[in-house]
Length: 306
Length: 254
Image 1 (tube, each protein chain N blue to C red):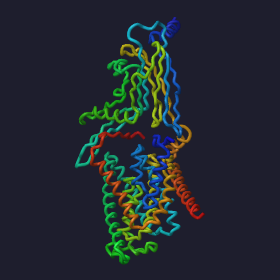
Image 2 (cartoon, rainbow over the protein chains, first blue to last red):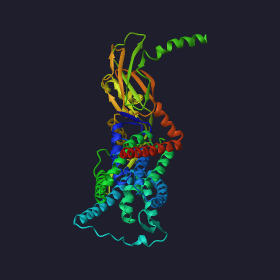
Image 3 (cartoon, rainbow over the protein chains, first blue to last red):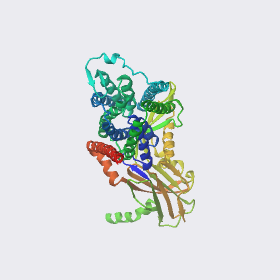
Image 4 (cartoon, chains in turn brown, blue):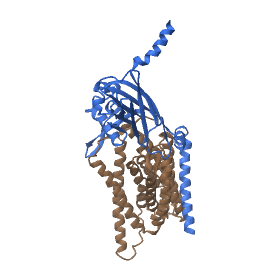
């Protein structure tokens, strides 16, 4: 069944969109990532104009994150205080990111920089997580319970403005979370994603938060940042396609629920290995696009039309 | 006296202007884009009206060209720099129709000479224009060819030779397929009657392509009330997220 999208001005198969939304939704619920880093490239691939794909994806992430975070709230795995601190940085970062994005757009190189961002960040994070979680699995396999790890009291703990985050069991300075939020906000505005795939590892490895709390807190923060991004796109570029968003999110919210259930039943380490593998696959695909000669050297873009 | 001359000229004018004229019919002069729109086929049919007997010489040929609204297109070319493929040169093609289909009653080179094509801009190559081509870029021609190649692959540009049926040099008909990825606007349909490659008569009409119903409503709202449109999108997203979460909880509790 084909559906004509009013803003994207293309006709697409409704079931294809529902399926894509569902698949990405499951991953989103399992890993606490918005799924934008998978969905946005997939939308390009099925012929949605990139500007519409990025803006609509932000709207869809709001839905799947909201659905996911409710499940986490019931399980009390959301650190509201940490989420709010991250959010403060995130909103400022998103606003800054939009400015950077428009500057790159005026240079005509935005596609390349977005792709480079993807390759670099997905590559670094994917490999780090993969190695780390494989080591963790090997340790548990070797027998015996691993000794309870003492958190290193590094530079993160030496900063001022300390705050107690009860849910995470942390007493750290607010500066690192604000910087993490800011950084992720900038990247999410440039890359058109929620930024969970960067924030989740940052929370685990930089802030030392427990894995169980990380997913819910990341979803909580993502809702607000992507809602803000959606409004920016809707009012400045008119590129949010609500029909496309509804089709994606119907599949997405159902998928997110299923994913949350699966995620809760899987060991955290294995969950991380899977997420790392997924991140590396997407990274490899994008890197190949940059390295191999494209079959069509020319590309079209309408500019200044609207 | 003056009135008589005006009256006479009015009566005689059509005959002077062209000996053969097109009387055209369209299966539809309006394409409505609804939510389940997946392309459209427009039947173009007509007859040749003439006061005199069919002229001697080469037979009558018919060319039908349908063009969507034109807008500037930026064409970018990739080159390998530092080991990766990046956009380097770009060129703006001033006017390129969003859709262009030509149907002819015989091979294109037989129905229209190059000079006539240049004059009436019928073939795809002539229909797109890049006057402001930057002379610093090598092979500016490659860029407009790329537009044609990419849009032909997407089914937006097409030239279909031998698809106009002409009966007794008087009746003609063809069908123009329009893909599902149409943009809104007024589409110009031009019909050319030719003999020996020379245009003997032309006729032009327009086909209105419009979004209707929900499509129209959402499109206008996104342009005219972007803030409300954005808030509506967010409200739908949150409601859907909450709905799915609640539904699943109820399912699991039962």
